Length: 268
Image 1 (cartoon, rainbow, N blue to C red):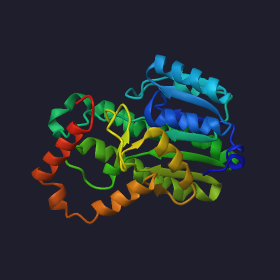
Image 2: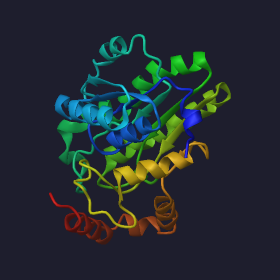
Image 3: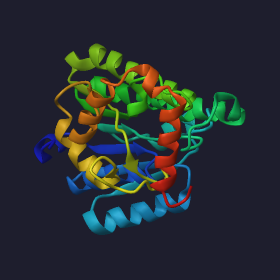
């Protein structure tokens, strides 16, 4: 675990996509460690509910910023809202998956630009905003949430997979640039986590709750520039690497995967 005495050097943490899922779980877990938090997300009611719950249960101070990361004109507004705040931990969590079920690239034409803004532009712009503070203080922590599907070309999730692969390469390149300046930049590549985006996949040994995933992931912050965030997902990644690509890309495998998703969610 990233120890409390290490966290205390930071003034506040900021999480994008903090209204629910992994972002909300990071907000709670780090607030429990004694940090004040800044929550950014699109839905005001979710932000207000999360903020009230965090303040009530942890005693930490919470600031909320409503912003839609599928747009590209929000960053000056966010910059203004952050004036006077020292952000020591940034969790770039916000992201969108147009459809949990596999779908062909040409079947999602209206969502391409929104996905680019949400999954790619948000990571770049938010990092640009906060990294300047961290560089001047010679300390800071940035956690960028990618996905296990970024580690292989993933048919029928082409845009999502490619956007998350960008997050991986961007994060690891930045860590090489800024490591000597006391800044930790780590990318996380989880597989199945039960969240609203994954239609609350049924939990099991592999599929984690958001709370369990976040708690375990914080144990691995100092071990390298990339981690799956939990041991079972690391093992799954190792197993998938043993499977020939022609098997992963076969129509039989894709059908079995779709059947698994349909059987293990409550809303598909």
